[in-house]
Image (tube, rainbow, N blue to C red; front, side, top):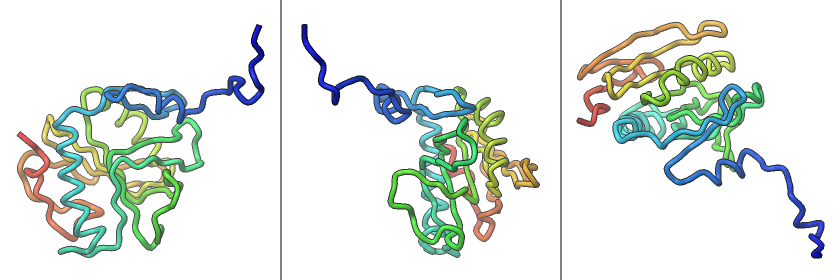
Length: 195
């Protein structure tokens, strides 16, 4: 009979332990108190998110050809401390005005409510993004939200009104638009639709 030393006794697994144990082709986040495990996003999703990051990031984060004054992050982990049923949650793209968050945190997660979130829709995530994540973002105080659908080639923008989002506009196809909160510059939607 062997004795297990106290320091090797079983411990309760954490969210991080579970996420780290997922296969490489899977990802997970906590939504409405459930660990949601899903396949990594398809190429059109990744292409749209990457293109949007490259379009919005330079003028708004760095001030290259634009106003600056923002932090723009791709797939950050948000731990906002306001609703344990949605922690951590990982939007596709997020932005904070620098006057609200002057410096990036040193830890791996963000605990400041973003000013803008963007979810890029996939067939496996659309219902969850619309029905669960969007209401959460509005409740916690995100001012602006975008839903980008690379399959349908649409951008839907929303503005928070109290604790809910109201539509600010929907655009389809290869159009050039100005969309809050990044309406200082024109956005060419054709660049998001990798076809």
